[in-house]
Image (cartoon, rainbow, N blue to C red; front, side, top):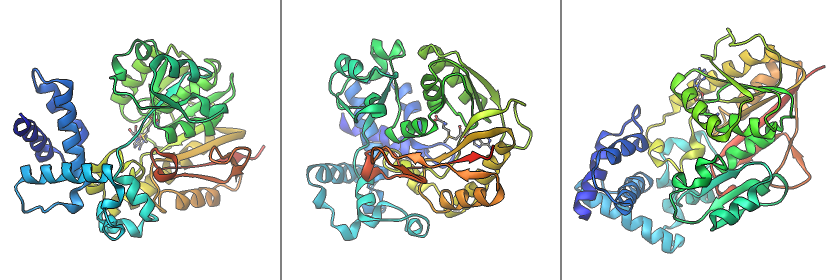
Length: 375
Ligand SMILES: C[S@@+](CC[C@H](N)C(=O)[O-])C[C@H]1O[C@@H](n2cnc3c(N)ncnc32)[C@H](O)[C@@H]1O
């Protein structure tokens, strides 16, 4: 049987490319297979992800089936003993160009080879109850972190009654830190400018206790449709969605107390969860995305109220998409002043820029910074 499953993994890898990421092709292939058990699907997924995670160690001249077996072996050895990979070899985990764009450390590289953790966001104040209901959950901390849970069980959470009742969302811990950094007040008006499928819109609506209004825009209509399904499940109604292509023509004349630009980015922060992206991203993409990010952020500034806050976040850690964008915006808009953010990693302190590294938070890499508009 395992030959048959390996050949499905092989087909996924043969079909995946820049436009059709491996996780998307994998979902399609698994949907098309009749009579596969959950264990079979897991075997195929693990093999595909192990292949991209360990690609830098594989001999590309070997038959694909052998490469897949070797990738699985490397994954197992590393899981049993992380020292099984010498530090000098760790740079094989990422393309050679990475060191020109991001701070490459042995700790980061090692974290990329680990299996990603599964994070849940409980509804405000419900973390403890949810952990008790689901079992096998670890609560990340006190205060706002009390609703951030790591799930260590093996249940398919999408099938649980709690999921269908909207009692939690699957959301990475670092993404949850972005919602918390927004710290929206109930009754305020917010704009989630790159809302996508609404991961952060839902969080902002929730933190506003369903009071006030959140505009959710994106250039992809299909993403906004998914957002609508998610808000319905969560019974959140204080939002409105609209298409926006990132240009100077805005979807509304509303003035906002807060704006979140969770911008499209190179996604280096997700390279643990999404190892295929390590091999499809290019330095040219990073350059282009940095320009897109500056344009998106600067186009939102005119509708920020005096005293309002603008939050910029990206799930990447490259210089061009983090500090470079932050500096460009500060320079372009003299009426925007850096707004220090609560540092969830050091309770009671604030910081000008939040950097979440996978090896420190056990989740995606993420950069967040904020400005306040002069009154
Ligand atoms: C990082 S994702 C957003 C994720 C989302 N905020 C969440 O938490 O689930 C970036 C989003 O920006 C959108 N996007 C990309 N280019 C854009 C543009 N030029 N204008 C507006 N949205 C854009 C993408 O469709 C994508 O949904």
